[in-house]
Image 1 (cartoon, rainbow, N blue to C red):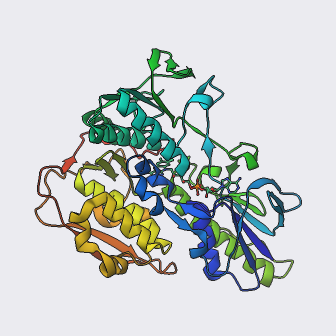
Image 2 (cartoon, protein in one colour):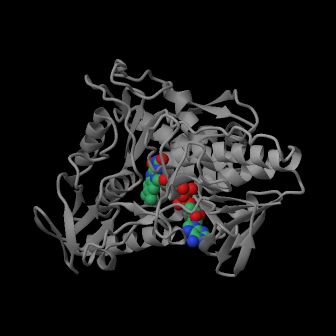
Image 3 (cartoon, helix red, strand yellow):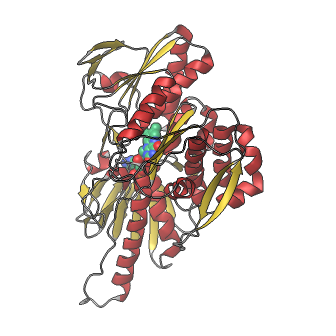
Length: 473
Ligand SMILES: Cc1cc2nc3c(=O)[nH]c(=O)nc-3n(C[C@H](O)[C@H](O)[C@H](O)COP(=O)(O)OP(=O)(O)OC[C@H]3O[C@@H](n4cnc5c(N)ncnc54)[C@H](O)[C@@H]3O)c2cc1C
């Protein structure tokens, strides 16, 4: 029997690592990715300003698995009837497959856009954006970012910060078709993100639809915006290997009896009928359900009588305790009804990234990320063995947020929590420690030196909205 995991992003690595530890030895596990490294994509925008972080956000796949076979090849197509994957270097037959190929940038056939705009999906994209933007800084001019989802907000923030660092006279314009930035978030979060962008010097233009791009201007329904650097983060589509489609999967995350589709590659409606956003947080959680369902099916196929009923599979329920975005050196975190800005939010954001890295055993990369994000003032207290111990086997970045700020998503009825002033002293980050089999994680605490200047701002909003979600782009 063979299980194929296609794609080694958040979803693929999580599915495969859980199977790696638990599948019976006779069952083959093959992980396929066109890239030999796992990319921590939700930190990709940081490379625009900190290119040296490249090593910290990529982990060689060889380091992640004990027994899985890793095949570095491109998935060309999947023949589900024959249970065969066509790869760039040959075919791969399977009994079950988990399709975790992520999404591609959608340009929606807007004339000139794919030709002139740089997307932000891979490391090379981040480097290309940096190069173009440094030229813009040298000459003065305008950078336009199209699409104000998670990636657009964060890359616009990095560009504005980089312009400041370069002492450059550059306008950073963020265009969004819908009426607000981070359109699917709760309103209090949207407002905080908007305010942070404006405070950091980004020219935010919502309700503005991009219609086409030429070599030097973006044409919108509100007129042309000349640009020197153009970044497009305006949408996603399915992978080529799935016919550019993001198929809808059912609550157990299956497309058919032997095919699971996980993460950005699928459009997922959870067991309660809620549309699940394309996000790292959701991909990680979906992947756990898929791994457990695969283990159930394998056990059934190997042990049950042919006449036995098919086993009940777990249903995925979307439940993410909060969201965090960086805007240059600023950060906005929403935890339930509370919105935090400033250094506490930055510490949370960094812990989420470092938590993911350490959960897959990449301790050095986690330390590098913390060091770059928080600076030596923060790292001194958590460097070396102490950090390694504290970050050991952190299971789920989203749960790190639970440890810091409380649990649960905001609801229309939930009162806002006011955090108007932080107590003096170190910021404490509680990191849940889980050995992947323990559902009741203990918590360890890492103290980070806290800046005493007034850069921590906690915000409250009188009308917290219902729980929102966010697509990556
Ligand atoms: C700049 C940016 C910032 C973001 N910020 C956040 C954030 O703050 N919070 C959040 O929750 N989400 C964020 N996201 C979204 C998040 O990164 C994605 O939702 C997440 O990566 C989806 O995980 P995945 O495993 O489905 O796909 P991916 O992580 O994209 O993994 C897909 C894998 O499949 C491989 N692959 C693809 N096609 C093929 C092929 N044909 N053959 C072989 N291998 C292939 C790729 O190499 C990759 O390893 C951000 C995204 C970006 C770009």
